[in-house]
Image 1 (cartoon, one colour):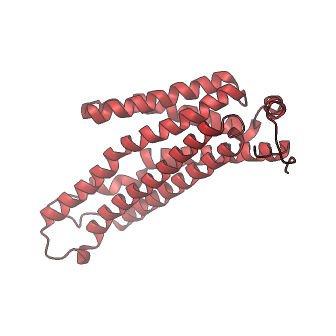
Image 2: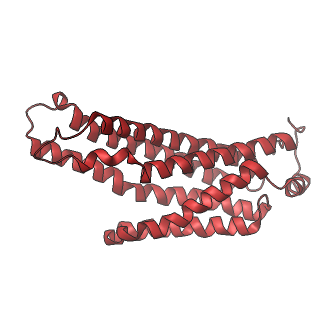
Image 3: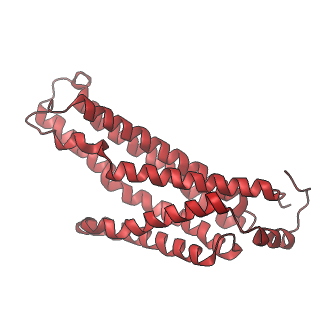
Length: 249
């Protein structure tokens, strides 16, 4: 038995939800990557762990909240896309959805790593009897785990996104040139992440690998938010797929 289709207003609403969430997590990602939230670590040295300002601590906490919001919007966007792409290919849509869910769960662990570094810096009472050199080494370790492990997450993210854009290409819900751009983008991100894991020196080229992907996410986010999906393509998929239950609203 196949599940019933959404009505056109419902599928347009879900498309716009996915577009809004896409834009939201892209904007938050830019703030996390290029914003001032990590400025605190430029002031901290092993010789003076107290050399930080309360303003920078507040900015860093803001960055942690932004990262939490980013992964929340990733889940919202993935769930909204799944709601209409499952009618095109249930298997691929499920794989894509689970990969994006795993991305968010792993991302939550990165937030914990980031907060652990902050706690070591600002709450020395939590780990007493440790010299400053050891505390500083622990901070560097947690920051390294957060910063480098992101490439493992990006492989999973790229796999999930590829499933979705293959379905977009098949369905014509969005223009095929945009679907091809998405397939290319996430292939490059996934392969680039694998290359950086194997050859860490390539990290210096990271902006060349990921900036085109960031541009794509803004474009497709705007497209889905303001344009929705192609209703003619939706009608064609609906006619080609028999259902055993009445259409829902």
